[in-house]
Picture 1: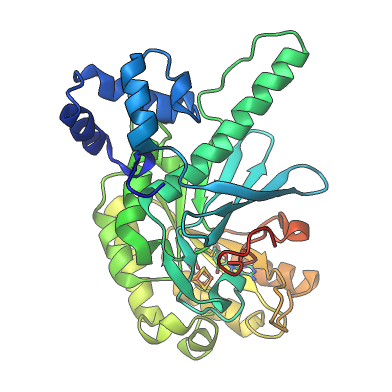
Picture 2: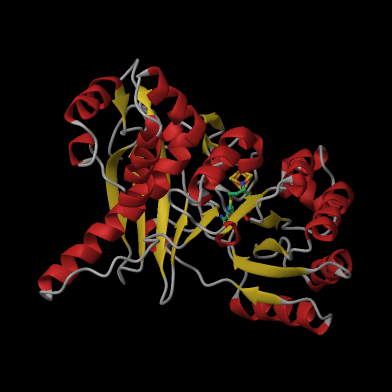
Length: 366
Ligand code: SAH
Ligand code: SF4
């Protein structure tokens, strides 16, 4: 509701200031923070160790509900789940949860739409509506985590057992949903700091991956950060002529500049970078492109993720056939560049990479 403080938008110290203004003792900050990020409760009533008066004040002046669920879809196997959220003003965003044997990965959005206009991406086709706030980024993870925890408790109760609470219902985060995270740097970074905060959700920074289209100033800024998150860079072409067409921001930050920033990142941090490459039938899947990519990545500590293009409405581009995908991978591997074909997830429910799309504002369930 307008005028209320959105608690998920606050840093730990901002929450401290708010509670200090309200005359609360210092230790309440940790208590509220733990309710938000450890217990994951969705309402103030359940914050049992807070005095009644404080709960009442929070309920009237603060807010936990930055996102409202509009709809959820699950893949046939139940391994992938897509959630459509409504923001306060009516725009919508999507997040995806992927269950693997040993981890649960949340793919989250950083913007409503995206202004980068990549040719093959459904998000890019609608343009940028606005940046998400830090709280709107964080709340996607909290929502998914809460759902997982509730399901775990329910399953344990059915077995008549006490639920074994895993510390992290969501074990990994990828910023690969809607939007370009480095075009919304401040909010994205605040969200990462909140989710890795040792007093709350405590996710290891190494379990977070930020994917960028290649915004050079953002990569340079990221290089200076202390939190060791992972970086993924979307290349999709190995020469400027082709990349200008597929990824228009290449006109501003051409490949040589992107690669220089990426080399600097790897040298400074010592961390391996992921290179993403969507294979598009007859467009960027030739052996010449593969050779060019191998040349570009020759001396770089990296791993290449090859993603057969996910088809999107409004584009005639098609995924490369399996043989060409394998040939592309084999060539990279012969050149001693680690490359794997990424398993396709969630395509049937339009939850694959690049398939997330902003619905028209205010319309509600599509
Ligand atoms: N804006 C960032 C992160 C979001 S997109 C970026 O571009 O990196 C996440 C990944 O999905 C990127 O690697 C992007 O290139 C890829 N992608 C976009 N559209 C796709 C599609 N139709 N098929 C497969 N991958 C796609
Ligand atoms: Fe934006 Fe990434 Fe889609 Fe390009 S691929 S339009 S940068 S979300």
